[in-house]
Amino acid sequence: MAEAARARPMPTPETQHFWDGTRAGELRLQRCDACDQVYFPPRPFCPACGSRKVSVFAATGKATLYSYVINHRPAAPGFTPPYAIAVVTLAEGPRMMTNIVDCPQTPEALVLDMPLQVKFEKLDDAITLPLFAPAKA
Image (cartoon, rainbow, N blue to C red; front, top):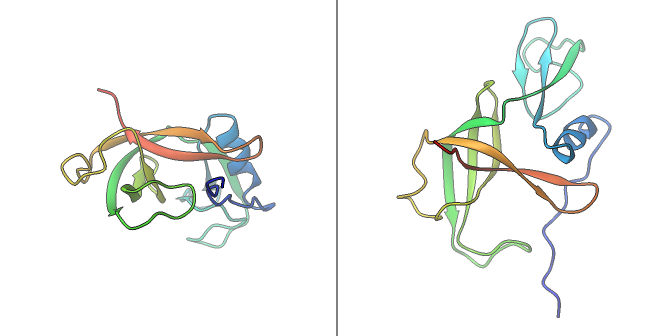
C-alpha cells in the first residue's frame, strides 16, 4: 500500500502570487503602499491600516528561528518523525509557519534566533513549498 501524500495547499486568487513565486524559486510577500507595512499571509488588504493598495515583492528568503516544536508522534501523511514545526521571523518582518530541514531535529541543533535561508520543495507542477534550512556561513 502506498504511503499517503502530504496535504497540498489550495491556492486562491488572493494567494496565487505567493504560489507562483515559490514555483519560480522566490518567496513573495506583500507591502502596503499606504503605510509601508510588510505582511504575511497574503491577503488583498493591509492588516495594519486596511488599505487595498498593496504591492507584491520578492523577499530575501532570510529568516531567524522564532519558535518551534519537534513532533515525535506518528506523523501526519507525508512526514517522518521527528520533524520540526517552526515559526520563523522573515528578514522583512513578518512571521511564517514552516518546517526546518537539512539539520538534526533536536533542541541542540535548533537554536532560537539561528539564521535560516528559504529552501523550496516541489510537491508537484502546481505547488512548491517554502521550507527553511540553517543559513550557510
